Image 1 (spheres, protein in one colour):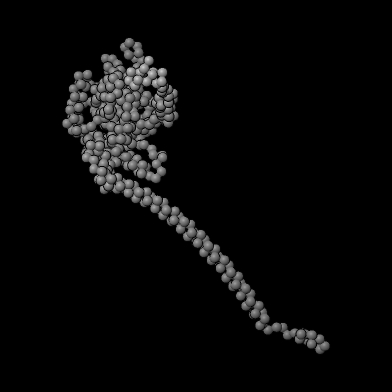
Image 2 (tube, rainbow, N blue to C red; image 1 turned 180 degrees about the vertical axis):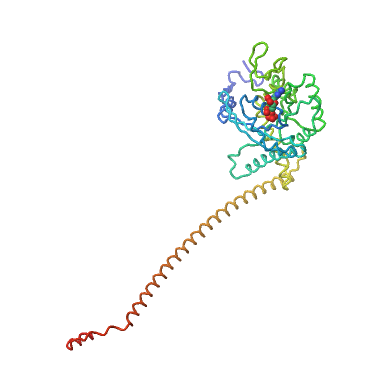
Amino acid sequence: PVSIENKIPIQDIKILKKKLNGYVGFANLPKQWHRKSVRRGFSLNIMVAGESGLGKATLVNTLFNREIINHENDIDDEDISDKDDISVKIKSTTAEIEEDGVKLSLSVVTAPGFGESINNVDSWKPIVDEINSRFDSYLEAESRINRTTTVDNRIHAFLYFIEPTGHSLKSLDITLMKQVHEKVNLIPIIAKSDTLTEEEIAAFKGRILDDIKAQGIKTFSPSDYENDDEETVLNTRQILQKFPFAVVGSTKEVTTADGRQVRGRKYPWGVIEVDNEDHNDFIQLRQLLVRNFLEELKEQTSNNLYENYRSEKLKKMGIEQDNSVFREFDPLTRQEEERALHEAKLAKMEAEMKAVFQQKVSEKEKKLQRSEADLFSRHKEMKDKLTKQIKLLEDKKVQLEKQKTLPQDPPAPAPQKSRKGFLR
Ligand code: GDP
């Protein structure tokens, strides 16, 4: 038999059988990552803001199922003595929590006093300052020579509590959200939604969304989620549909009409259950914040919000950085910018090294000065001692000389014979 194409007898054709390589092992990467993540633990920094009494502390405690924020400590008595001028304070609470061996290091930042004053014009300022200062510390830590221990204190999620008025957003709500929306993952929440009826909530949500859109306020949305698997996309859509989340918070257990023990709030007409999707949007909020998008919140903070802040800041410092993928690519400008950035970095490093060097020199100088002073004082001490000794000796000499010159007692008449010996 011959092969049809080359007319080579088929037995002469060598068939190179390439064996499939064995299992390489990269299918294990997720497991590796999983183990490492569990070992390291997770962290999340959230900021909660809104007027006092809207249930912020209760909701945070409900979300993590333990008392993270202590209600009493939220605002000091002295703060509320003068309603005209209540200053907004920033407080931070941290908690290490563990669930099934997975650790979460949680930091909750609150702003007691926000919206409490009669004049609230600038009450957003301490909040924005706090967000900025956390970005600044991160930027500073990143530019240090040794940056292995950069701690991420940036705010990853910002829960803004809207009063359940049923009308529309207040000007303070709009001002605050506009001030922070480009710096944080903003998650608006209708607080104490059990005080509104279902219809009222639907209408209120609609008006809030209209306001948010009209004002150009950006709220958190997971990036690229449409490319996930069908079930996840559906779930994410369901979560996002509930924006702004109308929630109920309660850490207390109550008994329902059918005898179940649930976390909720009891009313004469029935029980509002926290963990029931039909009663409120608490579950969706928790899914977004912890179960589904904790890492996404952190990624967006790092890759978009912080990056924008950083390049704005560098731009202000005179260094323009090209972050836009869509910007026309001009290699020369780009190169120039990169060079400027690199030089700025080098200059910073040099300045830091110089500072360290100067510090070392000044320390050495101080040490030398100290030992010089020490030597000098020892020298002086010795000199004083010697001077004293000299003086003592001189005094002695004077005394001796005095004794010598003092008239001597007339010598006793000596026998004539020995006179010679006396004169010797
Ligand atoms: P914060 O000042 O915003 O931190 O508010 P708190 O969490 O201290 O709550 C203030 C009051 O509102 C407390 O009496 C809570 O029991 C109550 N509260 C908290 N959450 C809710 C809620 O979802 N619905 C209702 N009706 N009351 C709530």
